[in-house]
Image (cartoon, rainbow, N blue to C red; front, side, top):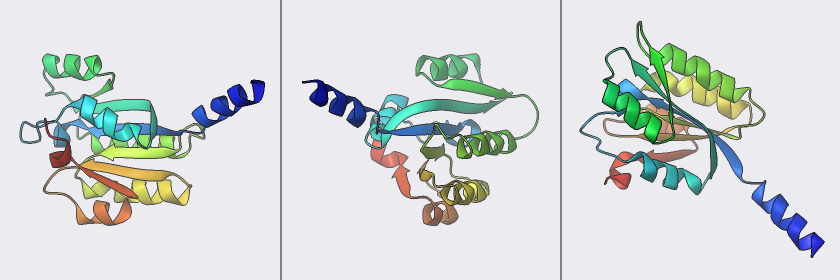
Length: 153
């Protein structure tokens, strides 16, 4: 019995740990009309989400910030400039975090291709969740692609 319990413990702890970063201004748009719960369900097949952050700019309405929080994601507010640089910096922290096995970026922006390449070079598996128009560079770099149209409400 002890061996079986220990075996279950090992199996449970071998699930991959995922860090998810969302490019809010690029992805939280009416035309995509998706549900964060479906995103989380889809990612559950790959492992367990350990980091879940949504990058938002100064134009994000309070209701959006509240909705992001209610879905279990941490809103990261960027008050000046674009969210890409702070999101890329956060992605690099995940790349060097030994407690995270997979980097998931929710974006359509090809500017994140170098981040994906660096993640893969450091042994991280990569996932990109996107919608059309979708960067061919991201599609050809990521290990896994999830299209929002496949997760629509």
